[in-house]
Image (cartoon, rainbow over all chains, first blue to last red; front, side):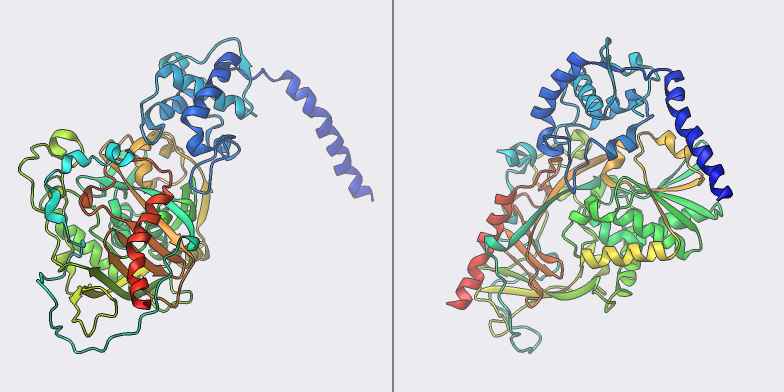
Length: 137
Length: 410
């Protein structure tokens, strides 16, 4: 019984520390604006949903843009995601969307994956994005 | 409309030379019913059920086609040696073992104990297993395992020179390398014959036609002056490299059937023996071997070539197929769309037919249906990266072929 008491005490301490650590951590930097994501939702429905699905769910063959998507992109530079979308998508006509449209679509995808919106919109060129990374959790 | 947009029919005016040809690459020219050299009896044929209710899946994919043929070069990225192994067009399955032999050989030239493979399509997975057989510890980093890759949306027969390269860009040395890879793969596939689940098998393959069957030719159309060199995409069939004659001593060739031997109610027929792959069984078998040998699979997506230096392995075989176009910024990878429909398996009808615009290939994982535009030939799907299925297209092929069996039952 005495042996069990020690881990139990550690567990309590760990649980207690979590909120404190979260409070003291710098807030996650927002990468896009709410208005941008809203417009992105419309564009997504028109240009992306035919393959990736209405709720970004994907299929057996086509990648989901939620869940596993985050595993692939969290902590990656947002400029890299924007660059990829700009060059590779929509797959049947890659590069056919404007930088502004691509930024809106990326904003929508970020929102759907839980990235926080902010006052500043996602820029429409990679240089302006700098090294900012996607940080959801 | 979509086909007109994407498949560049306009470039193929004058393609009438292909009319009536079945795309059978090795049957000799005939001008009517011919006496077969053999005196075989007419084999019993179980009719295929080519009815819409049997259609249970439509799969669309993109062949990763490079004008110069697959990229098998090496590249140093920081402290990491990258061995490329991608861009096999419609020949990825068929060349997977031979190509893996080349790639693993290059990887082993720096004497690694462990290597990484990026990509888990048939080319990546096969290279991974081959590296293990050579004694290396292997980790595959990929977005998906084999069953969800584009490889699994192929048709699954041995077609080692299907859209593998264009003649001019491939250069004079490529045919010999291709032959080496094709012969190596052929022997490797034979080691899976008779294995539980039949991952690899043979069956009879029939070419059927209402008109005399002639060997497919690829004459250049002089009215088409542009080419891959000027447009970045091939413009006509004559640009494609055909190499299958180099291995016709081992790969069974189509033979004309006499009326007595022809089991179908169609005027003209040729028959060959065809090696094919049962995807479900093959996938389980190969992945099983990979994990049995201590292989590790890591779900990871790469976004830039520089990311390979973050891996603990310092030798990397890069096999991402069509994805290499964006990951490695290789704009020489061009899309060639392909589509297959799948009927409920009909294992009692174990053969394939090609008739009019359709192909039906009966395998343990289903009857594969393909729809060909005989006018477009090799140009079908070139430049088209639309990966959404078109069910009506499959039904059109089935409708073209169905009368064969209706006649027989009449």
